[in-house]
Length: 375
Image (cartoon, rainbow, N blue to C red; front, side, top):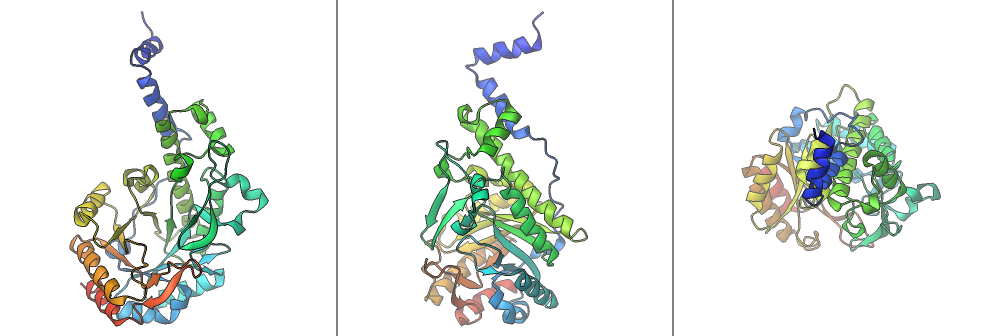
């Protein structure tokens, strides 16, 4: 009688190895048996949220944010210890003070952190092995047009993940109500795969294969799971620091066509889904409706960005107001949660972060945001 093992081997051989590839892909997806639970259900306040971006300098505007604009959540861009070269830097004391002042206005605070990239100053000798690495062994570094700093992308299978978890724990201890992770990705110019020593060792241990020789679909499955486990690790750290609080855990999905940012993958590790959209996007309403259907029980927060990266908004409040109005109209019609840049982001590499144009000093922007947030 033919044994099951022989039968499977025969089928795999007859099908040109397809069965073997699929089984290895499934093994990669199951590898490193999940020891971290998925996030708890999103808190009720996250389901009807009206979110404004914020910096530390916006503390004097918190009363207006709540009373004039009817905001319910502030998305705080104030990174402690180090930054990605774009997000404004701050101190732990500043973060705690901002949260305290926001809570006094009955506002929730979700704290931003770049979950992948950091400026070069973070790259101390003991952290060099944490960087995403090409198959040739080259560390993944790059620049962006709106940031003059050289950035390095870090790998979630390294102690970098514990570093981000420590930051999240600090945010929660300071009183934050949620964590927002930006740039969740293995960057495409590394071949969608990291070949650092941690990934090679982990992949070998979990699948029995050499990462360099594995089918790309198997490698992608491994790294998708690596990212999900990283996000869950960050959530677990924040929840441990504030066990009585139902924390928001969300990540920026700028392009759900990317393997790492597929909503049906990344969304498993989140309790709030976060998407970017922009004015003039073809089929914007249909795309957002489809995105909301991936996890219908999870709130979908949508941030509107300007197609050319907010550069066209700078010094042009009427254009920004018109595009805010268009996008917010769609978001509100679909019953989703709007996220608005209260201050227009800077696209000047010599002045990263934010411009001085905001809803607090531009009446056109203020009227549009107040109208939609009050609806």
